[in-house]
Structures are given as C-alpha cells and as structure tokens.
Image 1 (cartoon, rainbow, N blue to C red):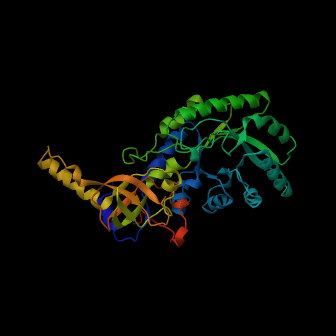
Image 2 (image 1 turned 90 degrees about the vertical axis):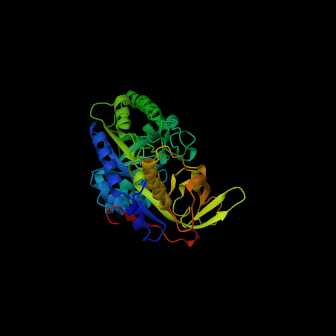
Image 3 (image 1 turned 45 degrees about the vertical axis):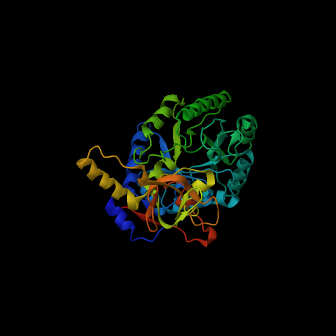
Length: 405
C-alpha cells in the first residue's frame, strides 16, 4: 500500500514508469547479507533479474558478486565496479566474442554447459596464453515444482551437462590444458516456493560430488544457483523472502568437503518486491462478459503475464487510500459497519498493445475505476524493466526512486 503523499507525487509524473522503493531493497539486502554470512556463503546477484544501474550500484555496496548470462551483463558488471574475481558467467550459448571479453577481464569463473563449450573456451584461452577457470554446470534432473517455462534442472531442459555425459566430459578435460576446473554449478529453476525442491537439489549434489570423489576429482567451489521465490499475491505481508530458512537448508543438507566454498546466484528474491509498475487508466470499456480497464502500460513494460501467465497484484492506488481511510474512520465511529459488495467491481486489466495476450489480469477486483486513475502493478522489480521492449515503437519505460522522488 502506498502512502497518500507518494501517490500525490506520482500524479505529477508521466506514466507509465517503474518506481523503486530503495528502503525495501536495502532491507532485503541486509537480510541476505546477515543470513548468508552466518555460514560464510558467497552470494552473486543475478543481473538478468534487473540490470538497472541504480539498483546494481546499491547491491554492490553489500559486497556481493555478479552472476551474468551474457557478455553484455559481464560488461555491465565490470562497468558498475563489480570485482572481476567475483563475476561468474553462465549461459548455454556463449559466443566467442563474449568469451574473449570475459577472458580479457579475468573473471572468476565460466559456468560451462557442454563439452563443446569447454573445447571452445580452451581454444580461445590458449590463443591468449591464459587459463580459464570453469565450473561444470550439471543438469541434476531435479524438479523445481515451478512453471514449465522457468524450470531449468530437468533432462528435458536445454541447460547443463546431463549426468550420463559426465564420464566423457571428465575424460576429455585431461586434454584441455588451458582449462582449470574449480567447481560444480547447479540451477534448477526460478520462483521456487517449495523449499523441499532445494533439499532434493542438495541430495543430488551430494551424490554427484561422491561420484567425482570416486574419480579422484575434488572441487573448491559448489555453486547451487538461485531460484528462491517471492510472494506475488501478498507482497505487503511477505515483503522479504525467508532467507533464514533458505540458507539454513543448504547448510543442513549440503555435504561439503574440507575447504569448499558455497556460491548462490540470487536475483528475483533480492529485487522483485522493491519494484512497482505505475500506470494510468486510459479508458474503461464495457464488454459482453466483463469490463476492461485499459492502461497506458502494456506487455512492452511488463512481459511476465503475457509470457507465462504470471500473476501480479494490481491495485487502484487513486482509490485504495481513499477507501481504506474512510473504512478506518467508519470503523472508529461504527465498529459493526458492513461495506456492500457493490463497492468492488471486476475488471480485465489490459494494455494498449496490439495483441490479445496484452493482459495483466482477468476478473481483477478493484474499487470502481475511472479514466485517469493510477494503477500499481506490484512485485515488478524482477524481470520487469529488464525485459521491456520497443514493440509497437513504444517509448522505453522510465524509472524513479523513492530517495529521489
């Protein structure tokens, strides 16, 4: 819920725009830092969730590393001052140019996803007379119990080296003289709210480590990826994810060898709740079976609902404060007052893009809504602004921050 003074400031800003609550971000980062430090865990922020410069600069102050999945993300991390020795580079399709850039900046580690990729990195490193640190990204065939588009740890997914390939990969590594194998990497998916999935990952990592030990191969680093989910339905109630339970689970169930370091790649859980897409109602359109609230923001500003039917809480912040304030007044005067259901209407909340999939939510309960009302689409700090596009020749979305509003 936004305070009235914030809503009043929003009224003077052209919509749509992203609003970032810096205090929420810092509180989240403080929790991540405190809980991970208990076990000396290493956290790398996943730039793919949000690569906004202001956000990156705030995260950097907490001395986290950077997890990158493209050459430009590596470049952005370097430009924002993340130390090269704390940058990891994952991704199933790294180009030669991207690999060369990362080699030139002596990044901490390449998370490698195939034997052919290892051979290419070895060849490019040899040409530069360098040795590349790599971790083998293993596909553990663990179900993340999340949406099929954001699961990454099953054999049907394109990511990682399959378990049945390990023998041939290990044999081939002996001939790759410009490769230094320093660890194993795993990532099973995103928006994981069932922590038992991470327990299953730990069990599989333990099994795989034992296999490598039986082949007399030891690692200094175990990277278990990220994927911790957030509460999209009740963002105010659960503003910060349960990092204490998350990190404790890995401490309890991951069987480490002496001297091993554990790495995490958290993105969504760090930035999702600090970001909100603010839009304005252009029109209210009466339909046959529903009413449409047509916004000036669309799938070009927030792709997730169109891409995989993701849920975001939608609020009419022009009305919510007035309604709740009146309810508070009335409750004090008339404790037993009942509000008629007619105060709430159902709307399909849609955007202006020339696609039927341009819809943020169907049958959304809102106070009676009119042209010009401000709409807040919550929990949009992750995979929101970073996925925005210029489709329909739309202007790129602007952003504003709570400490600079």
